[in-house]
Structure formats: structure tokens, C-alpha cells
Image 1 (cartoon, helix red, strand yellow):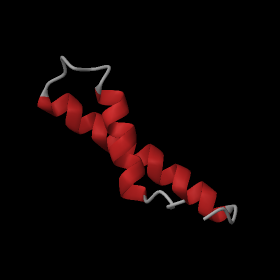
Image 2: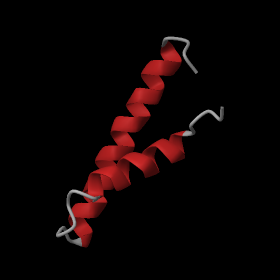
Image 3: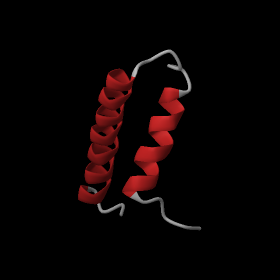
Image 4: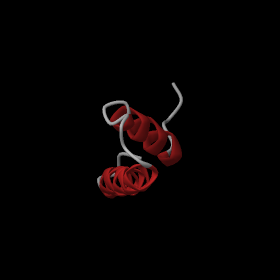
Length: 53
């Protein structure tokens, strides 16, 4: 099984969230992407600190 990379996780989560927000404009999508990037990066950092990566 391939380990999910940070980029893959951000991409997957971003598009999962975007599917529910199809009427959003470019700026809102950019803001959502930054939120997803932050959330996923924090998840990866916490996992790494716990020795899970």
C-alpha cells in the first residue's frame, strides 16, 4: 500500500470540500484551499510527532 503524501492529502481533501461548494468564486476557492492545506499539514505534523509517519 502506498503511503499518502502531503500533496495527495491536500488535493483529495480540497476536492472533497469543493464538491459541496460549486457556486463559489475564485477567491473563496483559494481561501478554502489554504484552509485545507493548513488542516492537512497540521494532521501530518501531529502524526509525525506521535511517530506514525
